[in-house]
Amino acid sequence: MKSEALHLLPFMKEGVLEAGCDEAGRGCLAGPVYAAAVILPPDFECPGMNDSKQLTAKKRYELRPLIEEKAIACAVGIVSAKEIDEINILNASFLAMHRAIQLLGMKPEHLIIDGNRFKKYEDVPFDCVVKGDGKYLSIAAASILAKTYRDDYMEEISAQYPAYKWDKNKGYPTKDHRAAIEKYGPTDHHRMTFTLLDPQLKLDF
Image (cartoon, rainbow, N blue to C red; front, side, top):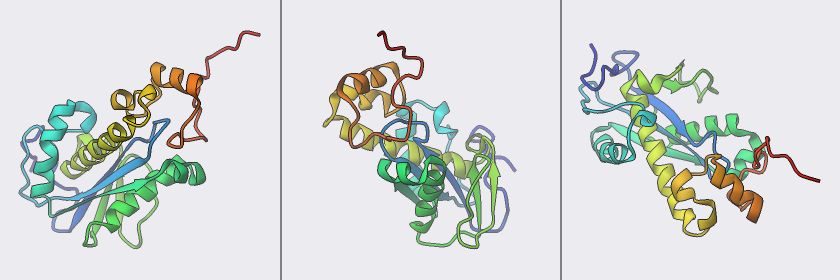
């Protein structure tokens, strides 16, 4: 049975407590990586639900309280830029998901993870789903929570560092963001193990 929400599936394994997980901010030059874990009821309906990248910011923020209200459990995990530099972004993404799962308040019986790789959480069985945020409701819901809460944080710290325009680019490697790094240098929020300046930039000696 498919949901009316753009034909996203309600779950992968029927009859078990299943959590969908996704992350936001993996490709950014600054800020933490966020992840969310969401357990939805079998009868969950939320018109307009989709992969957060396919939604407008307005729609994501409209859906967030509906997800939080109707979910059996949901939580957000965060891994800082400093931690990302210490353990690399792939491990940081896994850790953010683990932290979100741990904060659910109940242990899922199965996990569905957006993407093609995951580090097992305790003894919980899991399946990775490429582009899962466009296939399963719980992963789509997790993508919306991770994205909106990360965006909130980037807008908050943008007020302290307006030159980097994080309120607009959310830490992604835009031309304006890299130009600000070149002019003002990196901040404590930047990921120092990432290529902060445009690799195509040629210095004129």
